Image 1: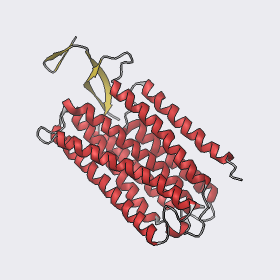
Image 2: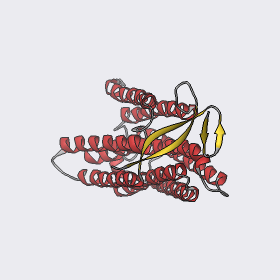
Image 3: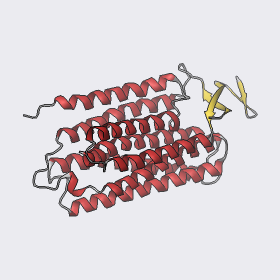
Length: 200
Length: 105
């Protein structure tokens, strides 16, 4: 792996870390616990399908795998956007951030399709404990993705004239941290909710 | 005071650190793609359930680690940030393990 040396501007703080970045990592750490609690709710009530359909009746693994792939690739686009901004390649950074937002929207489109299909197959928020915990868990994740898309679009708005250069690299980096976080949450949810269900 | 890009900025310092290249990020992206493909493939293996479950857990952990280390830059950032996130992750894992002992009766 080859490396290159870059100069980065960091505000002087007691920790030597940008306060915004440290604060954001603390927030992400608390979000990890938040999603763990929702996931535990799903697992505790696993198998309680009531009169409604079971996970095996409604899940479409190929479709969800495709949406997972889109979200993973959006993370790649995001990290390239952060890298471009740090290197001062303002227009390239704007392009990568736009690509990330579009892939985020595509993921949300897949989720909207999935939720609608499930609804027509009888799985609703109140049809069973499986329905409640599934929609709350994946719905909160989807809401996080939606917030991420809005955040990225606001970055694009601010960089509409000069692009996203080094002066905005810190903003792009923090937005990137959030985006990668929703990606790693989905990595876990996809495995636990969909893949393990298909494997057992 | 440090002079950065022609400007004199108080309360600022120049930090030299090693960063990965575009090639590294693309390589990680390809690995993530391949792992997701492998995950999708192995769930259809019949008669090897313990192995499949272990494989899925391992693949998921590797993907998680790759994104956090490389895409979120924890591999190159301050250790303090790594600890902050590790504590949250350990708490999350502890909560997930605790659910095994939840008695709904």
